[in-house]
Length: 239
Image (cartoon, rainbow, N blue to C red; front, side, top):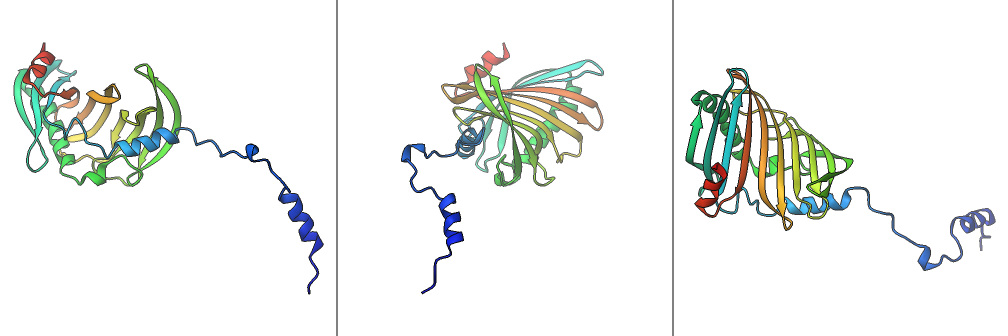
């Protein structure tokens, strides 16, 4: 029979206490922002009220600061059988050149992104690296802020920030620039998209866009969206 190695046993005795009260054991606290992030990952697989839950009223206001021209367009966006957006224009006014040089390229870019597989453009760990930046206040609540960097330079992906509502996990702010543009008429596209919540669910969305076009220079858009089960909702937005 081998003799026990007394030196090793003495070391183990130091490393492993003879008795540890159960109430002194505690799990490590979760990393900052981890709970909000987990809720966000769950939320991205829910139905998007702005693309998958019936018609949406869309008000697009555009401008070209150089020549001082403006234009606006009110439409109803719905999803066709192929799950692609279709726009029914309700009203339009302003300079036709702004519509042609700013609004049309933006809608073309959006269509190009829609044609991509959804899984390839979703803001998830499969496509992005996330870095927790801290907490921020927004609309009377709190949000966890993450820096987002695409893992690959691919169409439909942005480099910037993601703000996640701490309670619901809904993305309330997405901001940054597209790392690769689809439309030949656009040099650079920057966006700041904010989503308003009501009773924990998205009720409206405003996207502010700065677009650098190849022909007309820099233009700006403000796109306001909200579910529009009735045509009266669209009419009230135009007032």
